[in-house]
Image 1 (tube, rainbow, N blue to C red):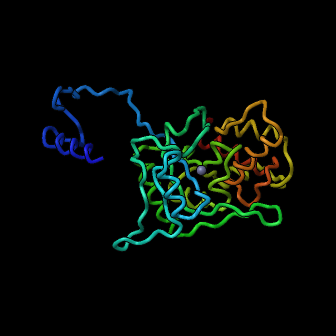
Image 2: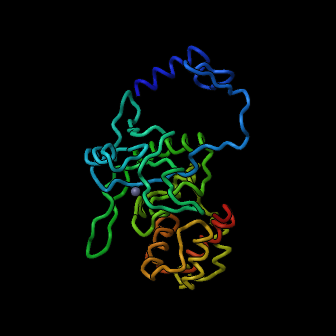
Image 3: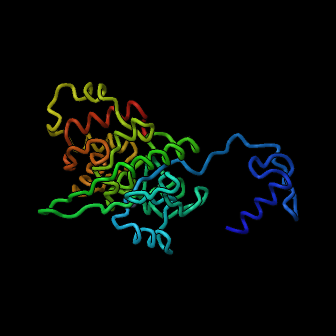
Length: 276
Ligand SMILES: [Zn+2]
């Protein structure tokens, strides 16, 4: 890190580090940067939201150890530094972090390669009477996450449909950030996708929201939207995909059962954001 900063300072003296325009002297050689390609794209296309399922100190230790990492870690209650919430950046945005694992979204796998990962300190879920009970997020944590996410989205021009839960891109392995994560509230502030209520009502077309629909029909819509759906999935695996979708877009009931409202939401999302 120190060496990189020093090189940047040197480059700044010689040619200007920020834009890197013109012919730049890098010591032993020079680079001509006056012709810039049009077919150039930022590495980052996806923003992945996680919870750590652990306390802050354990999370920080795990995320700075050798096996997993994420770009940012936000404490459950961010401490104030000079009146502003303090969050942790563990990996520079231009570098790759190991937060997504085996993953797939909208036609692409290896989402680590193309994403920024944000971990939220949150205990995840505990089992109560055999059912998963999730731990709510603190409003100050969500407030600073919103600020951070908006910055990242603006920096890389990330599309709303590419702001995802870890569970969206790895539904067979992951639940995070779970059904208590306020996706609708974030979407209202420019972070992530959310369907228009009127279009959901249009596609629901007067049916009981929880009336069952053909599972294959819903899975087809989810696959078109971008979820990892394969023809060889077992019923249990199909249920995991539907649950991930419901936790994100219909958190009132994430039973994994295909119903009319889930299908209407998927159709409204496809109409608004297109196929993945
Ligand atoms: Zn995760």
